[in-house]
Length: 96
Image (cartoon, rainbow, N blue to C red):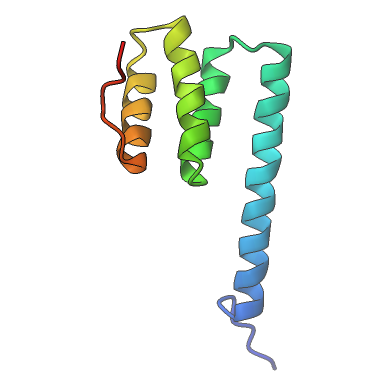
């Protein structure tokens, strides 16, 4: 009888690759959806959140700002934009 440990380096490597593949697939789906409807606020917010999780704060900020252009009172986008600015070392309020 063999003992299969799910926490072996091989299984963790597979899990990591699978997770990266899932993120990439989800990212591509969101980008495809925005090609069809670039003003879809929910999709753009989801994309910005995913980009934040992937450490792509500049790209996430671009998407948060796009949401704020359409809906300047969107609290989720305001919070997301501020998070990105903080992580990039920028002032919380953008000059207007």
